[in-house]
Image (cartoon, rainbow over all chains, first blue to last red; front, side, top):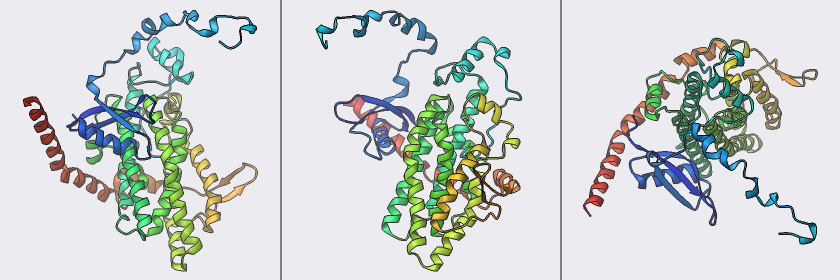
Length: 93
Length: 330
């Protein structure tokens, strides 16, 4: 077993953008995880902010849940703007 | 290739009709170029093959720091020293991206590193050659990283999502490595003394053939290729990638004004490729078995690094525990 905790790393690449998952690091604690993440994932100005989360704290959907979870959204075309046909004279809406 | 001779544990590639429903669904996804992710069902041998390949790839990045580390204190100028350190730091980063991808498959980093240190896991044969003169730093960047790029560019399309994403990140950084290597050589050839020019040719003479061996044995001698290609872990055969590397490298060699230590190397108009001489596979297998010029030294250096760093890791854990207690008490 690894002697250090595994952390998932999320980076905000620019102000105004979301934090995005980039990978993981091992560290003795969260502070060290931030330092390791900085060295590992931002050597070329890739970020302005870092989040680290212990991997064990993440709850994820299971692959066999894909259909029950996401299929219901598939047949709801009326949720998209393109579903509604308007005459040209209305212009951009 | 950074991973050579990866065992798949499979005798013959199954057809869709021979597969059970889960495996068929998996293969159909691969055939449709849909990436496999960590939580998806996958055949046991696919998982094991990936762990072997990604860990070998990661080990190669880590051991690959050692031949370059030899020149940090010997680099001719501060500029070259900073460039070399940046490159070595990248190699450490590449190793870590790959270990991280490997861990999504359920493998443990410390256990896999232990396999490397006990000689049970392989790494690329190329890093068992010594770096004897400063031009070797140029030749390693140009030829070794160049060969790695040819391999890694196609691995960006490998079927396992986390591996593919690690490759995309690595490829973005590799091109700096190759360019800085080539620039070292070009500078020596254009501005150097005769002794420095001779050094460049000497480095190329020694590293040319080992670089070609990086792509692994010829297709006829690669029993695991068919399964790895069917799973799209590998996207091209060893010989295809080797030829691609030679074709793109020879013109660069000519710009340097150097030659390759291969009298049979010449353009074949009919094939549209360079022909090249017979590779000494005997040497490749000996190096892979542990009998290369630096195998023992490389593993010893790695083992010492882990042992000598044990107190730092223990201290970090003790410090983290102490802080946690203080926070809990506050």
